Image (cartoon, rainbow, N blue to C red; front, side, top):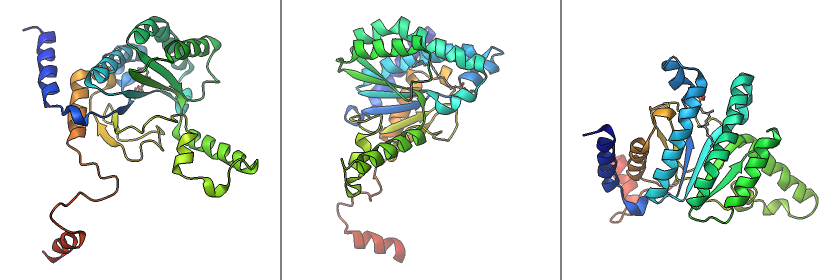
Length: 270
Ligand code: FPP
């Protein structure tokens, strides 16, 4: 059997284990490990980023096929500017190239693409491509792909705080009206449900300034696999792991036959 057929068979087997009623609507991904993948192979880091793009395409298809509705990926953080300028330039060109080559396909698949972050520092060519891609796909409603570019969670929160402070100073809102709902409505992800699942590849166990507000109750799945080696199979493993979690949102597990006091006491009296 060819390797492709074995992988297809494994994917099909894993897909059967997945509970269709518990598929996360919104998955966020920190695509980490491109550089290390390339270095391990004795290649320049750009090879890792190039391979990373094809993995992103595979995961976009896989998540859509599975029934997810939103995928948010961290493509360039506010901290990534500190990389050598050659790598920064390469990444910026790569984003433009991906948009040029893939936007028709994305549109055909009825995917809406949205960019999240401060796009001001990017060159006009990329900004124009972003603008035309968002406008071409704005009415697509099958799936939403959010690409975080020059994004930082703290910066986003500070921006919201500043906007609310301005509204308060101008009398548009009262300080007492500031609550979680109002705050969320000013975020760059306004109107989008928070991710139920965050996947980070390459074994790093950090959030790295990604969606700090939105990830408050997300389940976190760390994959040891470097992003360029990540694939549909690894994605399905993450979903299966997510489905085994007991999401309590800070509450307690429902105890159908016990009152709170009963369960509380028994754990102390044993
Ligand atoms: C992290 O690996 C990856 C990035 C900083 C870039 C990811 C970008 C893509 C996959 C392209 C996506 C393109 C579009 C248009 C969405 P790293 O370089 O931090 O790896 P390392 O931790 O091993 O150094």
